[in-house]
Image (tube, rainbow, N blue to C red; front, top):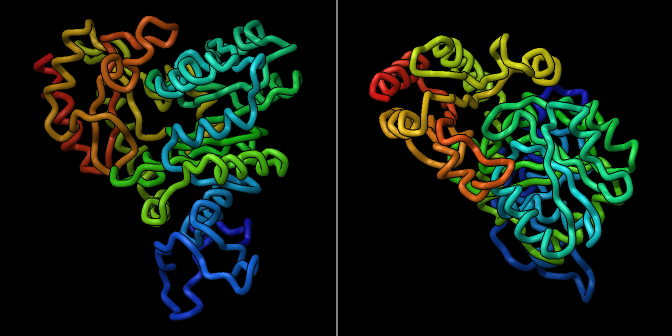
Length: 383
């Protein structure tokens, strides 16, 4: 598939050649766990055992590499297993990782509870403040800058190109979690990032029915390391999960256009609302990262966070919507409401990443924007 083709074209065609046996337009799901060999060691197209390779997973990986502009992609069973593989590939005892102070709570938990006891040191900084990042770097031991932009849940915007310059100056690898934006809205590798990670459960799958993660790299040596860990540790995505993710990606562009336009409209309608202290949405002109987001992103995405007057108001609001369903996760076609301090970010209470109990997070779906706006406003009336 030519890289000259537009994103929307590649989202439907990359890695999706028709079945040569039957001519089926949609490639089949290969549910087999093992493959017959043409004599000992005679693998057909390199396939031996499903942990090492599966045609359905390969089609997804080719698609992901194309959309993110990487040389190689790897599909995993979950977003955290994808992150774990990257961290294993990049870190050793004595190394230091610096990440944003507003990243997904599960990412911080993974490093803090698994890698820190192993001998890795962890610190956080406000990645939207480049001077704070420079001050937090340890030139002799910082091996990874872990970037999340927009961040979860306060929607901070980080300058990918500037962070790449800072990281590469000390020989660090720059990893960008691109889950909130998706490759349709933002391609970190084009700004110099070394690695992109995704929870494919979110916008890539897009329908709240498949769990998965992905790693996309732009370096052959790193690709070899991540590929070995995918095979040697074995946290691979299953064929059905890979197939469902491919199916979701085919409509990614049209979905993100609707997610973004709906979120922009709802965010604008909430500015100045007497029950809302702050609307966190990079599409608003007064958002601190608005101009940067406009340069890095095609649109501003479907995620909004709100800060209400206090924790009780936030809880009441979160439990009073009708179309916005109270649930963890994000990025599906349906609208979801989350109370981060006790849901997605409960594991970071008491740390620098603690989310105020007055904050709620909205994953704006693709329903009618008038219905969604009315639902938010009636819930705010009860808060």
